[in-house]
Image (cartoon, rainbow, N blue to C red; front, side):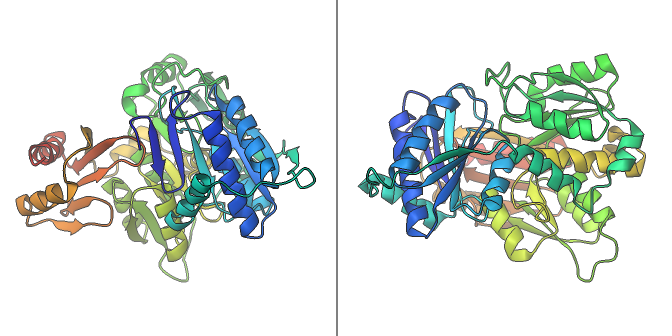
Length: 453
């Protein structure tokens, strides 16, 4: 793994033209296709975000798949959750999504999806990498895979959202919401606009083009949403919504133009689902990762649910949701997962659930935020280096009263705060994340973690 090529459990990402090349993409696509063939499958689903290298890598991946005798179903530029759902719809042996998600514009990536629509687990990902290294068996002239397109994937995705029992579109339509929307010129513009059109939502949008030329840093975190806040204030919108380039994360800006933090997306979605759950036969379960805010845990418990944490990473959260048979889950980065739809982060779903909650509560977004306990999350980065095991041990000695969790780096927890130190799976860094009732308390935890390095 180099500075510009990151290999993770379910794929790889890198700088376009440096380490991530068409040759590399074709070889790993062929490896995934060979794994599909060995598992008895015959086809794969291929989709991408709007990055400028996407078309080039689509051609390379298609050639790789066809070269091992696997048929390709291309959904084109589409949200990541749309591609995941298409894998299940077509009973495909796997899926490949060409997207670097929230990474800056010079990056792209391959994300491998299993036949269940969930990103590959560690063992399967390792097998695909092995096949890429040794070279998969290739097809002859008479067994080359075929290519066909699927232009209905987004429409099926939206139809499935509107068929959910926890979505009642009519109250949303009656509220005549006004949404300010920022899609960062990624894949989200057409899908989000189609969703809002079906909900009779008025939209003022920026960066709705799908050309992949991001006008700002693409991650939908508060410091990148200044233009959206300005749009909310200028147009008098009820709410601002921002999605990342592959449309699996949703961030919110309240009616004053203030970003409220990505964790509130999941917290409000949890409240929306639990409010429409009614009297359940058994205690519902909510799942979130180890770095997700306490606002989500509070929302789950106040709604009468059991709260379970999983290691960071969508695949880890998704499999915990599946194992726990959870009602809803996700990640504090704005990723909402509703297994009744599919087990993957889904920004269009999140937007529908947020509007549902606003419609039924009759409150403004700022009022919903103010009515819940407040916490402050501080996120920092440090260069990866040294023995992380020794760092974890020092932190446990510094904080002997904390409850440790070592499933993903080290998380130290108290009743109203926590500190999580872990190596990033997408960048060559160590992440230092803390949450507490005040910014000063959270910053103090991060500072102690830095000093222990």
